[in-house]
Length: 167
Length: 349
View 1 (cartoon, rainbow over the protein chains, first blue to last red):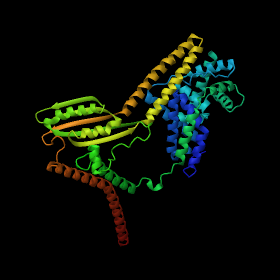
View 2 (tube, one colour):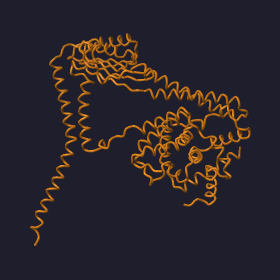
View 3 (cartoon, one colour):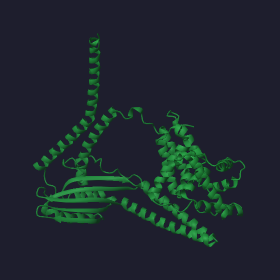
View 4 (tube, rainbow over the protein chains, first blue to last red):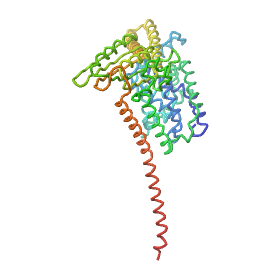
């Protein structure tokens, strides 16, 4: 769905927001590993997207790729500003874990494996698994060709699987 | 470059798992998705409101788009602001600046409150940093006395002298102060300081730092919650590797909390104590305590009026010259076209 510069632009934007607001937050939080900062950056990303919605050009990629590109720039600005990376991928596990014991163990292993990935690999995993972007959209977001994006994604997924199996 | 067929096949399997179909990646997808960071409901509601407000906000009319006419209008507005701003932020035209007087004097004259003074803080939750730059002038011999009075006045209003510097020479003397004065008493303190000598200029500003404050408070709250969760995780940890990892994260968390506390304290200080920069210049012309309006003051005022008028003319020229050039070019083009049309029949055989 494109964002035409017509009076229904705002409703298109709302549809975009409804469909991927949570995905943007999940992606930004995975990048920043800081909940408060992720909230600020998500809000900033939507604010920027709203301001620039008329500049969206469907010929240059999908709306989702455009929005995640804005979110990525905002998150990288935040990382540059802080000049550090946060310590946590997600918040520590809560007490109320209702999974069976083996699920709990497996997910702890996956969490540790994710934490062990390179930040760029973790970003690719977040774009694919949390945001549900296609390989072409991921390529647009990170600014590389589709084949290169596919190769990098494959490498990240393979490394993640190996880390899970090694544990 | 085409990806390896194995890569393509595995990524296709991954896409199938992400789409909810059965695939070798199904378990991995479920496990990774279980780690997906979730928005707090409060933040989700806030974001909803923000997007909704922005979406329904009135649009900027098309006629406000950039055009030469808009440029000209902007230049006129800038000129008006410059003229009115000069009237309010510096005080060469004595009698026109109520803010340099004591409150009682201002009330007597019925003069309006300056636009440069900050708006009153309506809610207790708002955090506003106020800054003031006050320039006083007096006779060279009186600089030390005025400087002493500045310190005494600051202390009387519960303020702090962050730094002070006084210098004297044969021909002139000066003193520079960086003061911190409780924001609640700032107006009274400025009125009292303004009585100490002739006020050459007074500039006041305010910055709303509420959002920084709220953001830092929220981060501190989150960091404390994270610490609590880490401590619980530490109590549950069984392996040495897990304990070390959690301890490392606790160290990071502790330094984050310390930094956020420092940020909050600094913001509180900025909101509670206004920064006031005072300069006292001593020369042979001005007398202490203000004095009457002298011919020298009149000459300075006249010079200032001329400066402002020159500024307005300059801005007018800046907007008018490009327009005149465009019109001239258009006229030349039209003239040349007319001439060519006239000469064309005559040149035919």
